[in-house]
Length: 303
Image 1: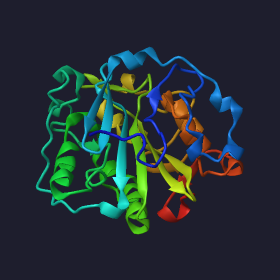
Image 2: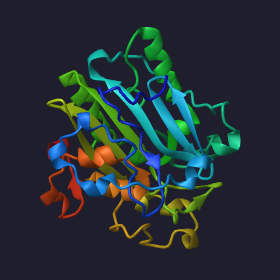
Image 3: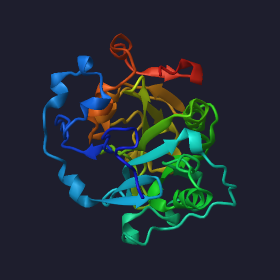
């Protein structure tokens, strides 16, 4: 049950909340997965875990886990194990979204957030990613993805676009399936302090995804940010979302844009500790130094 930290052959924990501005805790980095020649000692500094960790719940499902933020009523991060060699096709029989009874309903952004508006219940752990293994387990995994802690509000076209969000996810799934690889994928909304309020929650402007796999027996990873900033303005009061407002000093992005981003910047943006993923980033430093790399098709991915 749940995300397995040793799925890739060594310990790779889910990213965990940390203090704003603090360094990633080393948390016993498993250097067996890393190319030690590339280790940056600055990444080995320790920091206290964010007190927000106390306001979260770690929910285990079949082949994935969700760390739910009580205050934001959305996930801080999700982690899924994807076995590309053993994926199973499970027929989709319609959306079956439901609250998770293990946590209070008021911790979860439920159906009232999505009623009578252009917002989709966007899967964070994609429906097909944990669907592997024996048929009964695969079916249960698919069903588990329809719990509200695994959803986040996404403007309809953003979630459905083959060129952007789903296009990237299709490519990741095909990458694992074609190569018969095991992948660990971490996804979540970027919970910025100035996200606009809406129906008892705050609508996230951006989402992140970090994909990890083994390359020549060493950990490799790539990070992405997807943006819906300009698409949510019509859903909120103008004073709640002033034009051009962004959080954390980020570049001002337009809607429906996808970027490959240095994982170190994702860690800072999300206030999540992910030191092994930062070290394993496949994005060359020279390219990373030039800023976020906009993607227009999967051919632009640096894997």
